[in-house]
Image 1 (cartoon, rainbow, N blue to C red):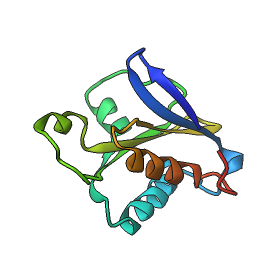
Image 2: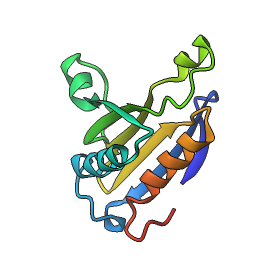
Image 3: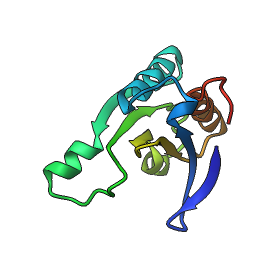
Image 4: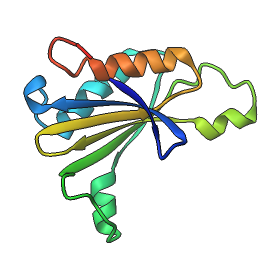
Length: 132
């Protein structure tokens, strides 16, 4: 799992997962595994699944040729609401892309350590053997 700055301002976590490194065969398989982890965590509220690929196609947008499917899973930990400003960084989302020979799974760093730890564990568990 890599930590990086996307566009020099968004702190993100990303896992590139070779299709030979996981028993998941599709974006939907990965989504199902992460949704099960969300459902099992009483701190997390499930919100929605967004088919980003279908939406971008529908509006005539541009899609990188290596992307075959792309979805976002939207959920919220919501363990604290200390001020109205924190709403700008909620809810959370995990992105899943099928890039041919690999999956790319990523999320924006949360301002709360337990949320980052949970999301990182969910994503790492996609690799057979649970490794980084």
